[in-house]
Image 1: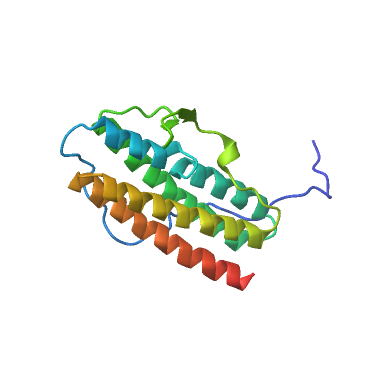
Image 2: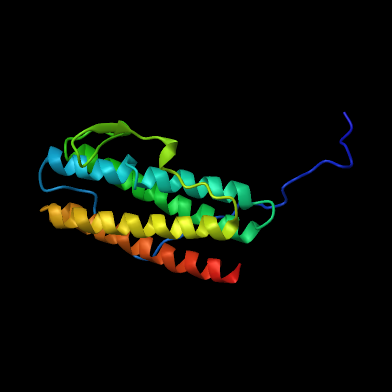
Amino acid sequence: MEEKESALANACSLRDVRPIMMDLPYPAIQVQEQNPVYAQLLNMDYCGATSELSAILQYINHETRLSCAKCQTAKTLLGIAMAEMMHLQKLGELILLLGGNVDLVAKQPNGRTRMWTPEYLAIPEHAKQMLAADIEAEKAAIQQYRMHIKMIRDDCVVAVLARIIQDEEYHILILQSMRREL
């Protein structure tokens, strides 16, 4: 079969993209004891409206839509998404150790449960708006992590959340720089 000469292609190779995160180790993934209340808090960070799952999917959406026209921006967003995937995995392990379930259902502050939904994502039209939405999502995540740190009395869990915050702050700096360059 002959290829059409007018075929469209995306020349942006994402082959060598690596997670974008602080060059610091993570604390051991361990807990002092099982605590279902702490597991529920982390479940919000895992799959709630402001969560690692939401961040991953929002970054992947933005990366995909930008990859043809803004390859370097797309690569950076994919690298950040990869770091968020690592956060998701660490939170999942903590939730299980705390005696919770990793089932994509988060308990809301009002006590109700809600399964993760794409309604949580910001899908703006233009690159600058995408980056602004990503910055706001990172800020909201940091605020939620800090609130959870104040509520959790398990030094092992708190140490992991504090380390995740460092990556999120780093992501904000990168996103702000990219937004200024557009």
